[in-house]
Length: 490
Image (cartoon, rainbow, N blue to C red; front, side, top):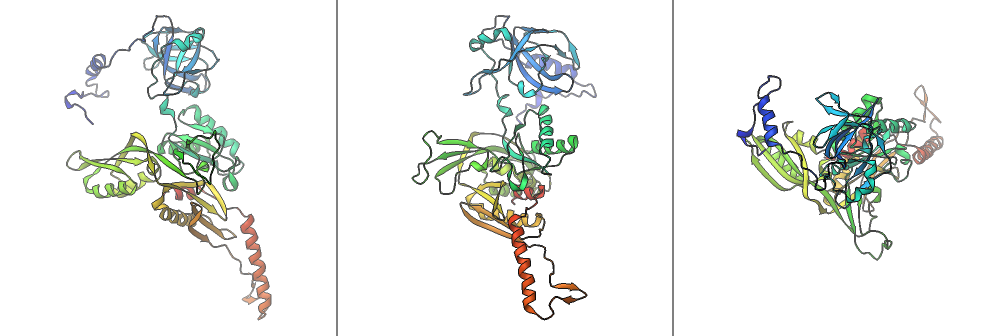
């Protein structure tokens, strides 16, 4: 980890060892706050470091005062400094400072904070997303001068709340959407990483015939998805269906005589919903997000780990011995391959001993030969089940998904036809047989009509018509296990 062994301080708060050494190291090694170039001692700029929601007081902001001072009773506004190509933004709302102080670690009310201090501020906000980390508090009377102010660099704080994968969340019961939406809104108060939109990932706003209404939610990672589902169950008693996570892809459209795009349409766009994927036959190039993956595993499983990386389209694979029994494996991998079942397969290949983490890659995108695969149930496309994979592995992945859906979908009174479609053609198919009643039996071991074959044919034909009618109007029940089949394609 590139640590200097001689610089590591031996300390333990429980044993009260090395406490003074830690405090002295903080004073000598941590740089003091730098003043802003235009600091005149009176203009307030307080950077929000963190914020959280409390049911009685609302949002509590942890701030660092970079210039000026703030005290109870002041009227303040929240602004977001410019990040990359985004300009500085702020609203017209003003808030009165209700309480402030420092944390010792309990709150100690002081009524005032000056330049160089860090403390908590309560201004009456009701949503933590109104004061994201990296935002700046300024006095309302100074709003006309915001354009000329030198703002602190937001760093990665504002960028870190951008979602890295998306999924649709639907209630188990068709009439539970309002209850689910209210529960997710409550969760978002204490989880600013959630990006919630009141539209599902299906082709219409109703969520399609299979899932009903839903929410499109952005997450920070796979662990975030699991924590979200568990919190819904523990805090609200709701079981929700979470569709397979999808990552944003960058589509660059190429000139085509068959498909004419509007003149004002962009030649490149980022899509998060696979319903916006280009139609079959359209010319385009796809860039997918990639990440740097680090895996630490016993050397006995080196072959399995390297083989897994190659199967998941990993490049620039390198190994480094940590000690006699442990190696460090690094690679650049597509983010779409990591967010599926990579972790589960890594644990399987290493007998549970491997661990991994990810980091941003430079460059963050790479071109790839990808294709979208739609899942079709009885001639109806299930939009949330669509997934993207490399064109070389489309047929293999489609067959695995269809087989797993056949094992997980419940048997119906009608035949269920499972198909996978890619580039406008069927690449895999399975059928689930319907339940069938013996219409020829009348009990007691006797059959209807005796030996008359015409009567038997009439009853069988009537049953066949009923099954065909049910297949056209019946609804296939989807479960979380069915969506997990799409996630795990190995």
